[in-house]
Image (cartoon, rainbow, N blue to C red; front, top):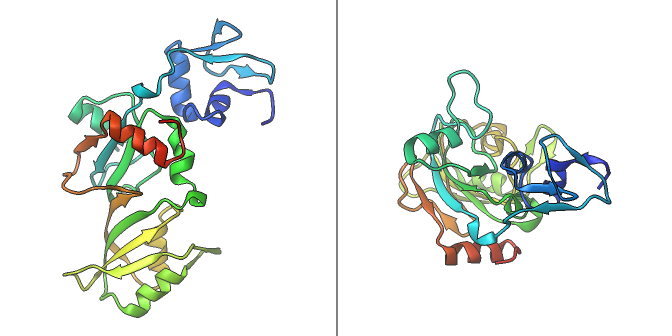
Length: 238
């Protein structure tokens, strides 16, 4: 790491939080530098002592949330509504943020948490955690199309990693696509590169966690035991 650096970046590198949630911790008065309460925007050096007050893994929350279509993940503009606003308004849940993205026109499973440590281990392609999508397209799905998706597709100069692609039972225009990476609009771009347009996109699984019977806008919170198991799956202290 290159010093001096902003405190929120330091906390993110140390695995305590994302930069955004680190700023929230600083504003809440839970971060101290050399024994003094830190301020947002502060920079630290390699010799500074950074402490996080009341850091306890048992206080972390992990929610499996069904993001409805039309809701954006981050940074709303104009009259757009983001996940944090929606779940606060509809469910009274605060203090959690989405891990990764799911575009506005897509729906399905996204994990919400206040534990910034999970972002890298969960999303990095190096760890190979699967993300499964059910896709409805504008044309009949063929085996040739599925084979091409599975081999990897060139999207604007980037070759996607090998994937799993299967027919979606009961829908001749549908497929189930399993990825281990998450480039921006990747599923839509992969399909478009092969001459297909996506009409509906729903993420149904992230790693071992499934959407199951959740309805749009609803969530399931992992129990303490489930949360400890989740952290172990990601290589984090339980």
